[in-house]
Image 1 (spheres, one colour):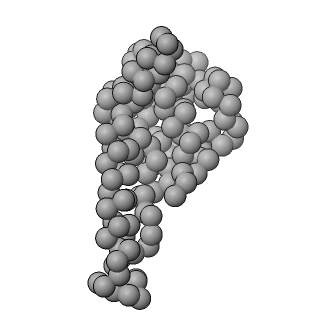
Image 2 (cartoon, rainbow, N blue to C red; image 1 turned 120 degrees about the vertical axis):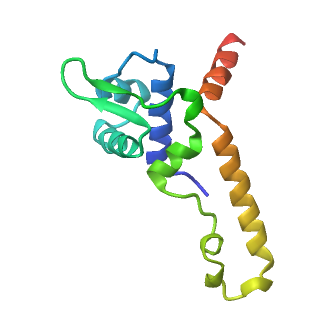
Length: 140
């Protein structure tokens, strides 16, 4: 499994916003430039993140983008699923009847367990924890 470039850009944009003071907003042009995201691509990402309730957007002279929740309340899983949809390692994890080997398939359980472990890890990885990691790396 590999996340899409769009999900990677969304994660970078969210991390950028998480670094800001809660009262601050960032211009999408600023995010695009500093995170090296094509502006037209970022516009689509911002729309999806807003629909998912992860960010607030406002227009005008004092407009911009900000997180809709605290960094500790937004996980990597939230962002990836807002952009790419649910994480699925194999079609059979969503619909076991799709497998021609049915209930005797030895792979089905492995795919389901691995998918659950990945989702749990991404769910536990919140933006406040990423900021802590970043601060520790900068101090080294």
